[in-house]
Image 1 (cartoon, rainbow, N blue to C red):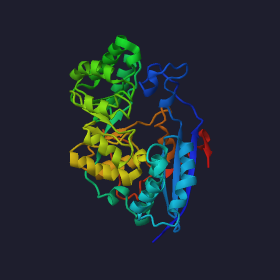
Image 2 (cartoon, helix red, strand yellow):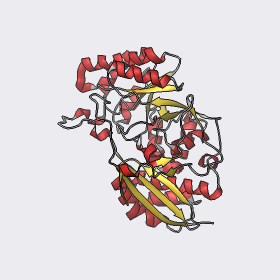
Image 3 (cartoon, helix red, strand yellow):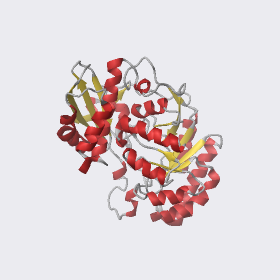
Image 4 (spheres, rainbow, N blue to C red):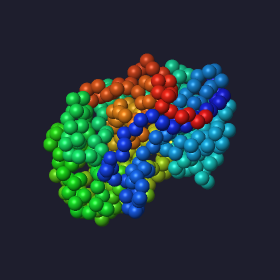
Length: 390
C-alpha cells in the first residue's frame, strides 16, 4: 500500500479584477466598531490555500482552505507535515488524531483546525484516487439521485437590483434562495425597515413555493434580533443564519426558541464544538464547512451526531468537499451553491483555482461515479491573475 511521500502547500493571492465594495452589502461582526475604513474588509478573502499530499506511488490528493491562507500554510509546513510523512493515508483516523492531539495546546480551533482540514481533505482525495472511487463512495455511497441546491448570493443592494438578480436566478429553478441583511443595530429603525423592504421584495419575485433563507453573518446582537425577528416571521424564512457572533452560544439558544429556526456552525470547529451547540439546542440547522471543521474525517462524525439529534446538516458554501458530504449523508438535504461570478467576496476563487466543480442544472447538481477522489484538479487557466507563494 502507498505511503505519504510529501506535502506541498501554496497560497493563491488574487491579483485580477474584483467587484468593488457596495454600501450595506452585508452585516458582519465588525459592524459594532467605529471603522474609518472598509467595513466589509473582514468579510472578503481574496486568497486561497491548496494542499497537495503525494503518495510514494505518484498519486496526489488535493485539499484546500480559505481562512488566513498564509498562516495556515505556515502551520502545515512547520507542524503538520512532519507528523504525516511516511503514514498510510488509509490510516486517516489515526493521522487525524495525531495532528489534533500533537498540537492540542494551540491548534484545536481556528488556524490549527483549518490546517488539519486542508490536510485531511487531501488525504481523502488521495484515498479515492488510490482505489479509483469518488470520495462519496468511500463515505457510504450515494443517498440521493442528485443534489438539490439553493442559490446563495442576493447580497444587499438596491431593491430593483436585488429583484433583477432574483428574476435571473429563477430561470435555473433553484430549490431555494438565500439573501443577506445589509443593515444592523448601528442603522437603527430606518435600517430595520430597509431590511424588511428587501425581504418583502425578494418574496415578491420568488413567491412562497420555494424556501427563502436569511443571513446576518454575525452582524446583529440579541436585542436587535429580538426586535426584528417578529417582523420577519410573516415571510416564512427557512432559517435565520448566524444572527450573533459565533461564541455567543447562549444567544443562539435563546433565539432558537423563537419562531424562526436558527442556523449556524460555519465558524465552529470539531466534534466537541458541535456537541455543545446541540446540547444547548442552540441551532436547528448545522452549517459546518468541511475545510474549516476538521476535514472530512471530522465532518462525518458531526453528521452522525446531528443524525442522532435529528437535525439537518447543510454545509456552508458549495465546493466539492462539501458536495461529497451531502451526497453520502441522508440528513444533508440540500447544498449551498454560489454561481460562477466575478471575484467579489472570495468564495468565487474556488472556480478560478480548480476545475471539475459541477454546474447546477435546473436546480440540481450531480457527482459522477466514474470520477475518482473529489473530482477536482488545479487549473492553469487563470494563473495570470494570481500571485502564488510556495
